[in-house]
Length: 403
Ligand SMILES: [Zn+2]
Image 1 (cartoon, rainbow, N blue to C red):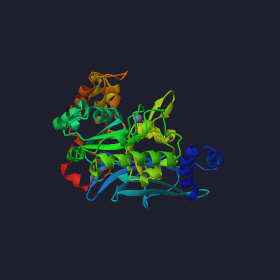
Image 2: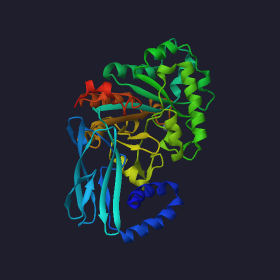
Image 3: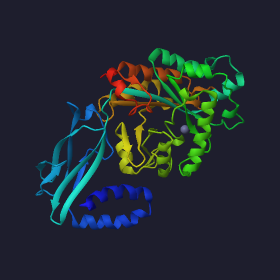
Image 4: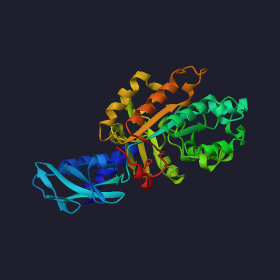
């Protein structure tokens, strides 16, 4: 009975643990030889399900559960009989809790069979978007060097404020400790604390990395290194801006960490992280080193919960610095019609492309943000911070739910 359940978990675990896979690989082969497939295919283990994935009922969400089992077996899902067609089984399950374990059970010729998946119900879901900007450091150096009277004398923050005024957008700005050329956060003055506080309802600062270089600094760094860098930046943000302006990181630089770093990040308060979960050169990258199965799932879904750490992972939907102005609508349009990708828009760009001195300066970068924000606004998406509630949806937000 445990074997089938163990199989899924250990398959996922072995892919991440490397050498452990050799042991379990033998066991997988043995299992495959002696048993017919018995598993839940839908929903995916860790799926985050919203109104678009099922039928809202009083106090719950009715979803379809499907899988495969030996054709002549009676299969029950959550204690109720399923419909059978050949080796397929389907059943309806009503999610009533924030998290639900769905169990399929049968009696195999060699003993009881069981498979389980655990899913999250995004109960208070509504169409929403989050805008985060990575790799920030130049604007803080600029303010420090120019000693502006106001933060918004810096063109970059003035631009973000104008976009906020026009669209209501909220920004999470992920920052470095140092630009790497002598400026670091310890030098940044605390005399703008009042201004930071006044805009903290729409502008948050978060840790991203110690510095831009080296690339992929946390891909194989021990958790202690990542946490020390995070704590250093967090401390500075609290000093020069104050607690209301602080947010947990939305992306760790390059979207790559050791898996063992995730639980410590959760313990620091991180509840959501974004990545690309896309294939570069034949392998998934910017995927926090999750295996191909999870990365492939995330490449085609808004989000997925890693129960091991407790963190929900979100797939970035658009990278404005990479997306020409005339491609913005055509990038977002297909997402809006896909139930797996339509609910949550993860909008994203990088700071350096705003600066004329940067080698890859994008002159129309602000216009690209404007076009992206116009698109989500016209399509009814509301601005949120992902660290509030479940990716920005909480009980209080229900009142502003929109299609
Ligand atoms: Zn980065």
